[in-house]
Length: 172
Image (cartoon, rainbow, N blue to C red):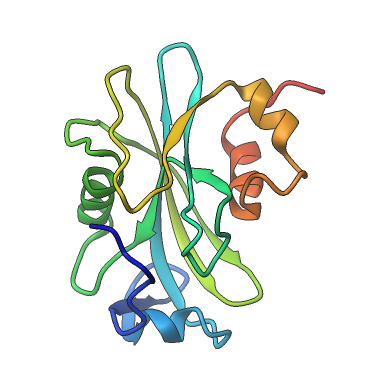
C-alpha cells in the first residue's frame, strides 16, 4: 500500500519500561512531543556474507525522510504482540514470511518528538527481498559502507546508535 502520509489517528499501545501495556494513544500523539512510550520492532537482515540490508525511508515520512534505516521497522499495533508486529512488518515492508528472527535486545530510544521501546531482532536471509511501495527501495550494504556513511546525514540517527550495539564496525 502506498501512503501519502502516516495515519495520525491509528491507535498504538502505550507501555511502561518493562513493556506492559498501560494505555493507548494515537500515532499522532505518540509523535507530537508529548512522548508516550510506545513499542516498536526493528529487524536487522543480514545475508550469509555479513552484509546488512537497509531500507530507504520515503520522502513523505514525517520522521527522517529519505534516510537509510533498519531493514524492518514499525509500530506494534493496538492489541498486537511484539512477535505479531515483527511478522506483519517484515511481510509488509520486505515481502518475507519465512524468517527465524533472533531477539537481540530491548531498549528505550528518545528523540525530540517521541519515546519508543525498541525490540531489536536479527535474521540471516539470502533470498530475494521485495521492498514494498511503503519504502523507497533498499539494498544490502557492507559494514564498511555503513561505517563510511555514518555521521554524514545518510543514515537515521536511531540506526547509527543501534548498529554499534549489535555489530563491530570496521575502522575508517
